[in-house]
Length: 130
Image (cartoon, rainbow, N blue to C red):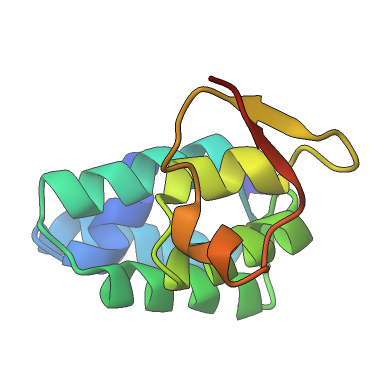
């Protein structure tokens, strides 16, 4: 198994460098791939901020990663929950932070933390501090 850094995932999505895209494709064919949740976090930021990819595009790419047979996403179940909340309008970083808390109740000063998903009753309890 090998692990991918953010720039390999970004190349796979934006395909702006044919040589690097070919390298990424070859690596995927040769070995199983581990993707950490921190790499997902950075990938979302790069795709959104640098390449101006839409929420739907990012969501589709991440959901596809969860389905690839030779890809292991760290905390895949929790990442799936985070993607559900992200689909409802939550910030991906906030959703991922919340998803990996397990039974611990997340406390924050951020009044908008996962607001849309929380209002739909999709998230575990969140305590917003004054």
